[in-house]
Amino acid sequence: MADELAQLALEDEARSGDDQIVRKVAEILGASSQTLQEAFNTAIRVRRAEARARELLAQRKAQFEASSQ
Image 1 (cartoon, one colour):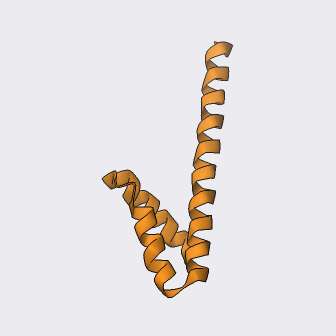
Image 2 (image 1 turned 30 degrees about the horizontal axis):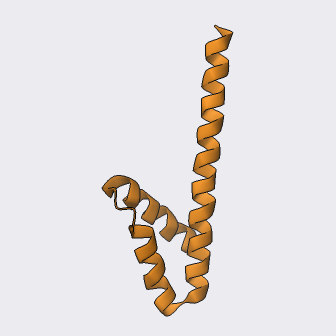
């Protein structure tokens, strides 16, 4: 549940450019369930970390392929 909400929030952020949407969703969740809010925040951090790692690996692959030609 929290991961699905995190994915939706990050997609909305990317689409709309609203960098406050994640905070707004976290606030709404925290008003009703601190546990869900914490799980959401964790899922956001995990997904952002994964995106950064994938970006780094893609850059390294591109550099390797460019130097191999």
